Image (cartoon, rainbow, N blue to C red; front, side):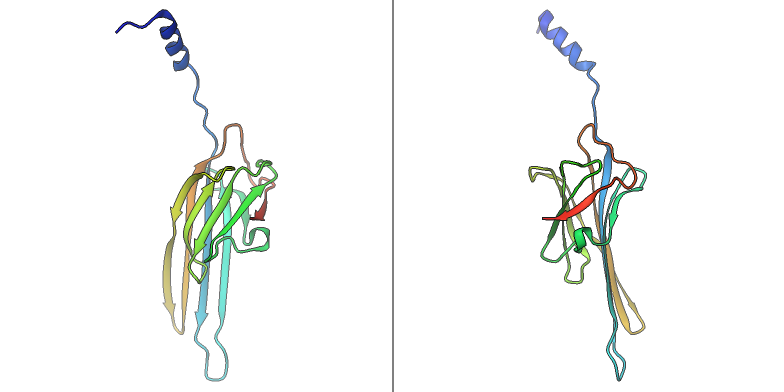
Amino acid sequence: MSLSIASKLLLTSLAVIPAFAGQKVQAAWMGSNFNTVSGPGGSGTAGHASGFALLDEDGKDIYNADYPDGYVACAAVGQTFKLDGGCLTDALYSFKCTSTEGGVPKTCEVLDGHGGSLGTGKGDSSTSFFGVGIAQGGGCSVEFELADNIECGEQGGLTGHIQ
């Protein structure tokens, strides 16, 4: 098969076009809880922790909040929020997570501005028994690339908004 001059020029020009890739980042959710058995005359103690972080390739925070927009980052019925401002002025990404009833992440997903999935993750959890109590904790993460020409640095001035 013989290629025409025009075809050869087109193929040659395509071969020298540089490939651009966006900044690689990681979205990470965490959740934990603990409960203790009550003593003879009182009630037990319980606690919960929650959080979300967007990290750069070096593991440095671009965004980090215990409660984005004042809410848990991951909920049993599912929780979705967007980050905007700073390096993500157009709120191009949504972050979605479902958890156990105790708030430990089960599934997580990053969505683009049109609702298309950029990546999913499955939660990793552990349970510990201690003396008169139990603790559960875990996390879920998704690695994805930001759109071309978006570069987020440490503490990128982002704000979370629940959807």
